[in-house]
Structure formats: C-alpha cells, structure tokens
Image 1 (tube, rainbow, N blue to C red):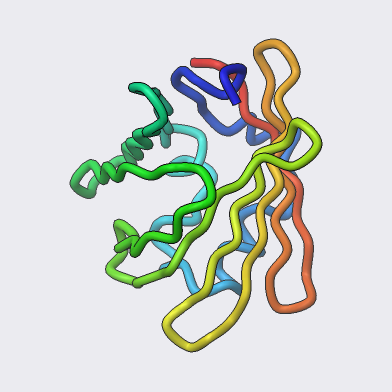
Image 2: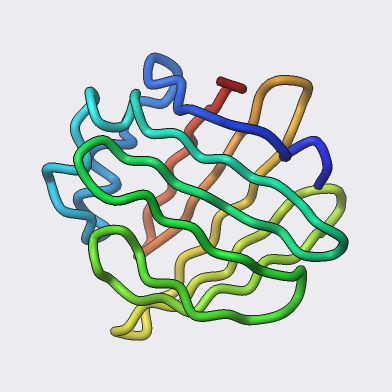
Length: 135
C-alpha cells in the first residue's frame, strides 16, 4: 500500500456520477458538490504498521483516523455518520469493507498506479469509480 501514501484529490473530470452516488449513499448534499469534491484532500501516511488517514473538506473540520490492516475500527465521518471499517490488502489492492449504523455494507477497492488511484465503491447495489491524483 506504499503507493497509496501521500496527498490525493479527486479528478472530478474523470469521475462521473460521484456526486449522485454520494448523495444516494447518504452523504449530505452540501458535501457532494463538484466544487467541494474537487477541493477535498485525503492524506495517507504510515508509521510502522499503523496508517493515518486525514480528510480535509472545505467548510468542515479536518478528520483524522488511524488504522492497521485487518483490524476493524470505528470511524466517525466528517458529516457525523458512524461506520465500522476494516481495510485489507488483496492482490495488491487496498480493500475497505464498511458497515454503516443501519447495517448497510459498502466496499471500496483502491488500485494505485504511479500518481493515480482508482477507487471503485459499491453500496446498495450501485457502483461508482472515482479517480484521484496526487496533489
């Protein structure tokens, strides 16, 4: 997962449908605009076997959490929703399995290639792919 370390931003031009998918999955509309999504930064760092993920979304406090591969943890999203998350490495891809407060399952598969990350998320029978680039 070393290729995933660094600061990333959504390439909104190559990520059609992300706004609608985020709204459909329960993210507040004000956090799903093209302007907000294109300015959101995610920074992933590592210290030993522990990862830190920091999300900076315009207009709301920065959110940071720490995790270890294969170890479930509780996550409070910047919009207040609560999740249980487990991240693993499978065939060179980072796989996040997320359970919402209502029991819904969300899976995100992240594939890194150079300065690009492809994140494919499936929730409630819908799938969306977003591309992120190193900021």
